[in-house]
Image 1 (tube, rainbow, N blue to C red):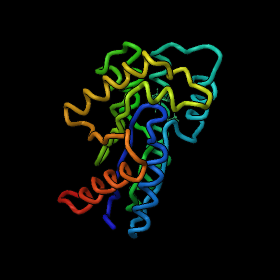
Image 2: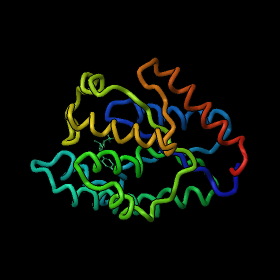
Image 3: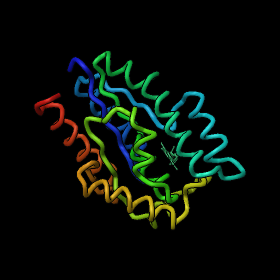
Image 4: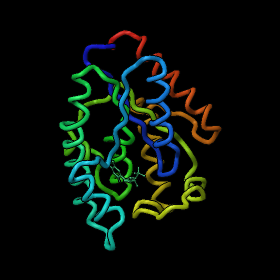
Length: 201
Ligand code: TMP
């Protein structure tokens, strides 16, 4: 196992399968003898719980700026309380959503990406950031559960556009998500094992 751990995040639209895939990746890595741990944003901490209760499923939508600041605050707590300690133990941390969710979702509200980056400048850069791509129309068909404030077609399209820009600039690595779960999992596992066997890790 590597000395400083490895930090991976998985991004995508709601119902793109990223939670299933993040958990499958952890399971597959463990099967191969790696010490991998699943974490998520919004986190399980106080700010994360506040976001889920009042921002995502609250009665009134908060201002875009307030939302962005809350997600950034939750991220600091997630890094300090979960990610960093796990990396220091040499573990592989798989985060279900991270900084790029803020760029895509809060960016889709019209906030400047530069400002979102600035309030997130304490966020550690991951070793690998994967984006599971799926057309927004399929996302909405898949969503049977209660929808959060982020989940309408226009918003999903804007969010996807930003994610795809981040793919173009090489920040995110794209995985085609509209195919069988096992095939997506295999592609993600290949990317990660390549990373683990490569130089610099
Ligand atoms: P999820 O638990 O299904 O992934 O949903 C979390 C929601 O929170 C999802 O609609 C995207 C949103 N979100 C943001 O808008 N910004 C962020 O920085 C994060 C982490 C999540």
